[in-house]
Picture 1: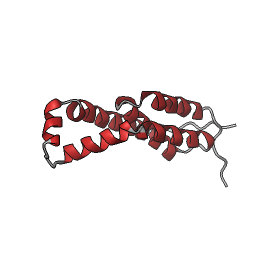
Picture 2: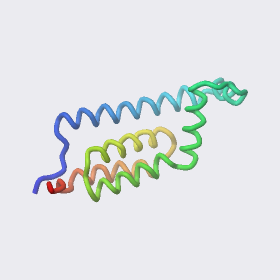
Picture 3: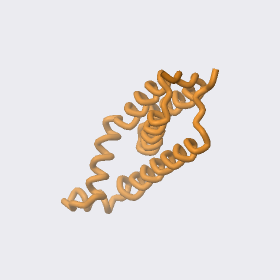
Picture 4: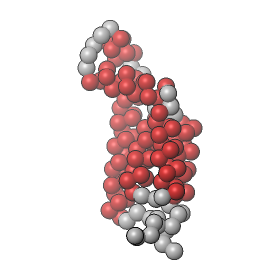
Length: 124
């Protein structure tokens, strides 16, 4: 019984995906969402990439899209382990943890950890 364990190369890719998602989420939270000067400028009608990102991220985390998406993808990954699903769930969970979807994203991280104890899918 071979477990679903990513290779060293895949772990490096997963580290890059996780840290990139975490870094971008931290950038959005502390330099775009929580900055009052950026909020005032965007509400005054400034049309920049930062204002668009701020508005999109705010809408998504208010509706718990990051947490729900991470939980759904992690549940699918638990049923049928795949590196692509693992990477997507990891990125969504990292963004969700930073952008106020803590409960659902932490459940998704738990499911991702459980998926490492699953058997690898059989080759067809």
